[in-house]
Image (cartoon, rainbow, N blue to C red; front, side, top):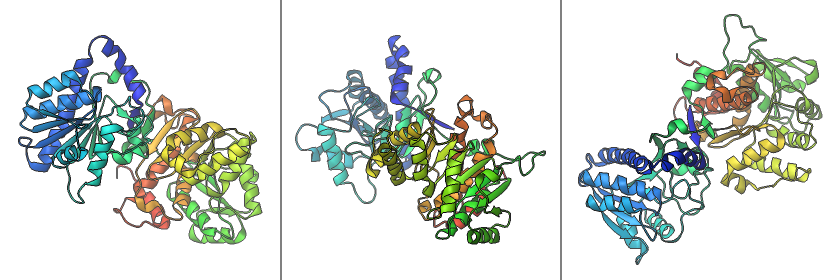
Amino acid sequence: MIAAWTGEQVRAAETPFLERGEGPALMRRAAHGLALACAERLRARRGHVRGARVVVLAGTGNNGGDGLWAGAELARRGAAVLAVAVGDRLHPEGAAALAAAGGRVLAAGDGDPARAAGHVLGADLVLDAVLGTGARGGLRGPAAELVRAVLDRWPRDGGPVVVACDVPSGVAADTGAVAGPVLPADLTVTFAGAKAGLLLPPGERWCGEVRTVPIGIEHALPEPALRRLERDDAAALWPRPGAASHKYSRGVVGVVAGSPTYPGAALMCTRAAVDSGAGMVRHLGDAATRSLVCLTSPEVVASEDHPDAVHVQAWVVGPGAVGDDAQESRTDAVLAGPLPAVVDAGALAAAARAAADGALGPGKVLTPHAGELAQVLAWLAALGDGGEAPDREAVEAEPARWARAAAEATGAVVVLKGATTLVAAPDGTLLSQADGSPWLATAGSGDTLAGIMGTALAGCAEEPDAFAAAGEWARGDARLAVAAALAVAVHGWASRLEGLGPVPPTALSANVRTVLRFGR
């Protein structure tokens, strides 16, 4: 599992060490790890470090100091190192170390920024050490002018390797928000613990590979602000049957999906629930849709019952269930009921109304994309919640903020779908998954995800400690967020099972069976 912290958390953990006078030692450890990573990239690019051209974009604070100390180490290994000072001063000890190692300094604010840009573009490696975790806002002044000049002249092919120090300058360490120009990194070397902004959209698109260098304060870090599940986590946590299991104990998923207008949503959702290992799948819908569901997935038990008349562990409501009075009635009953439910697509408006009325039952998991989340927040604001109503662009600029706001306002887990999907729980738990192929952006993909998520939810619904192997944080209500993140991860891995290319949701569902054969 990948854990990440806010910059504030890391700085707070660092404070006692600084008060004991250990700041220089921490900086040297960080700079040494940074220099090693840069040397590795230089060897991969040109075979050796000696003779390499390195440019350090150095800010005025400790981030700049880390970069200057790393530059000094590279200079001692034979690289030609130029520090471009983007502010009115340099970290004094770092600057002295660079000078002693034979490095040079150029002030970016002197004259035409094109001159400094030429040095950057002519380098083998550029070390971005302008802004660190304490920065607010993006690049300004000479630093912004320099990065814009570099980006304007960036070659179509090639260009220097870019290594970011702790965070790419202009990416908010806590939120991933991006302000102003950012020099995209091939590698981000972060210290003590990964910063949350490196795993959050939109900032993570500028981070490249992320590598964490320990500096000796790791034991003092608090609980992470953000987590990301990996394959080993899914293998350990995915609900699986034992020798004494039967179809009811494995989890029964109820599906309120499809309508005469959109029958395909029901087919994809139920098939995905079957393929992801549900003990039983029950579908409620109109006669024609039920017939199609049973023809394509004869394992599904289909009926025209009301939710109150069937026994399940978790529900999936909403996929394609629009324009049908009976489906809308079933959806309302599930939303008000006590059982966990994945709430997708056509059920999101009803969920917002129920939340505003205080009638949204516990354990609900909302699965909007950015546009749908903006609508949910707008509905909540209009119905008296009193919160803000951002547009889609605002949600995409700060997705973690708005996913958390929606979770707090509704009391539900919110799964904000995208290239990086965020799972936010009302208790503050936040997970970030970036496992899927870009080809997942296709009609029906969300229906398949909803079915997989329904299986994961049913598998943990009656077990508060179902995911205790992940740690104390995953117990109780937080398990619903874990189940949602597991489903997102499995869905993403299934999309990449055969490489990058078109993956129709019907084929994706079959891939899930292979993905879930962990350790085969």
